[in-house]
Length: 221
Image 1 (cartoon, helix red, strand yellow):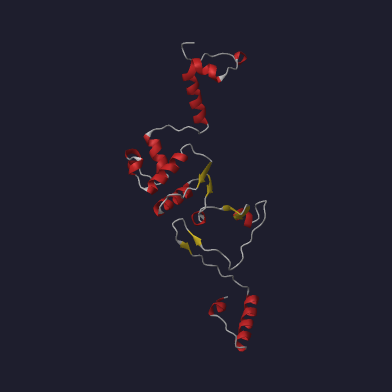
Image 2 (cartoon, one colour):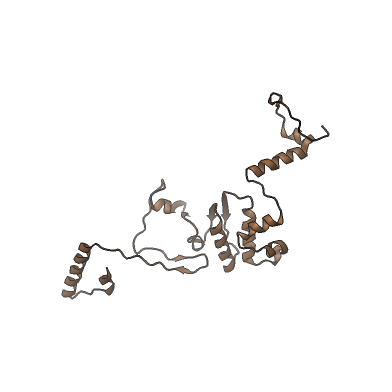
């Protein structure tokens, strides 16, 4: 068993051996097989400069910084990008972030937001910062006073299996992006049919005759 090499044999000669016994005498061969299996399933990536620089470029980190900088010399935003690049190195399907906004300045929050938007897998964020997640999440599970209230596209549009939530007109909360800027949304005007438009026009004329105030934007309907 000194020479570690495979010997062609018939399938009838197959036998099962515990992994620890194989490692005791054929550790190198076991490692080679493990690497081939990992490569085949996409769970292993070679730690070479070109591969690392290419991966980090997806998070906005240039090759010069990746290969010739130390963590202590990076800015807050660059550190966030580096951590996310490391977390996604093995191409996970899901990333779970617990209070990711802690100790981050404004620039770092912006970098984190952009990196999460570029990530193609699923993301679960556990946070107390509703302002940060509003522009990032498609579904929210809010926990308050021991109760969990789901909201988001799956629940509002009726695709989920839980209670439906309806947004009341004129009762919308102010929205902010990850950088803290207020998002201003303009409601689309509803186009009326010709009969509905004539009816609305008659109603406005009647209101004017009664001395009621009619706003100019009503004439645009």
